Length: 246
Length: 254
Image (cartoon, rainbow over all chains, first blue to last red; front, top):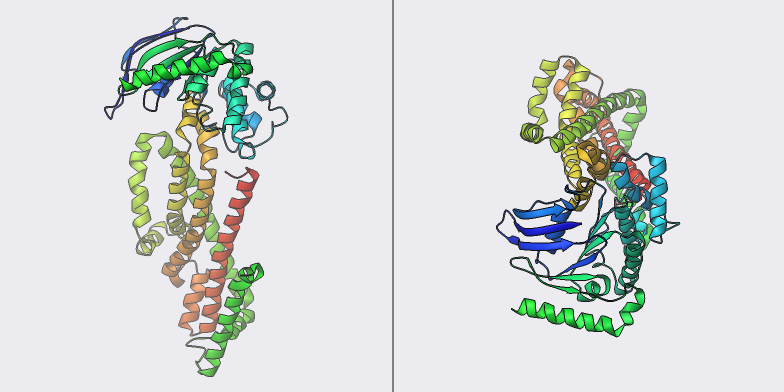
């Protein structure tokens, strides 16, 4: 889907956010960018989304051109919903910005809400929803344009652990059903190990990729109790400590 | 503290002040042409309610026309400043100059320049009322969180769609609270302009009644006009505050 090579990004204040990042993202993959704060993982995600431009290196899309609006879905750490709009209006927003008519767009939005388990909450305002439900709306909004690529920036970091587990499991189901590519930024070793097919370890100052670990776990809720999951967590932990200690 | 006491305390305190005031005026034999008691003031109002209320209406018309003009101008200028860096560079310093110039100082000039009395009063009141609604709306338009702006960029929202679907709705609470401040200021601006215009101009507003009563030593009538003015200010503030709450409740808070 996308090949990154030699990517560098330096902010105007002199911080070197990324140095010489190379990464291949295959169609249908579930990739986690894992690292501590300041390792440039969010910056990398913004570069992929086209919300920021690199100072060095290249992004090569398989299609030969950057994706059109709507081909990428983006989920932020906060749900970032319009507080004055209902759940379905929030999910409809990307389609509205793409010029869809309300009748068709709203039907899509309602289907999208149902897909994330929020049927019946169409007319509820964000403030009346729990944090987990708001994040579900945010995911439904990112998926409503049927993107090939879903970018997620620590979407579950602010949720409690039980809610996070349910959302992680539901995300895996959505990924299997929809077949889109996911790039998931996280600072949680457990989350990366549970969700991703490929775990890309990043280290700060300057932000760079230090290692990559492939996962052979079954993407399913039961995996959390699988000894192989515990072993993967241990492997990733060791690798991360080695990378950061060096 | 009992809740009913807290709720009625302001009114009870007001009644107490009125009783003490009336008592002091009577006991100390202060003549009403120096400092009238509340009963004399009410008497002055009752003896000519039509004249005073007519003046109040005249002042309120100036106030509301000025408030409407200030709201439209403030909103338009805030949008201009938000979408265009050039407009921002041009408008911002002049808005501040307008804000810091005392209306008392420029009102005579405006009255002479504009000529038509009603329009000149409206212009003065608008100048006073413009800044809060402009400044708060501009702040509101810029208040949308950066992630939401990114989201609009991601979907190719464009400047006008972003304005309509994100920035303007985000600015609504700011606009309304600016409008509330501007409402009180529009009344002040209208009265100040009436004072400056005096009997030479649009001789029908409450300020003119105050001046007129002062010249004639009808001090209770002057106080009655002052009380009406204060009540009008409170009513404007409460009314616009109510509008703010109503709109915010309809939007589900936030």
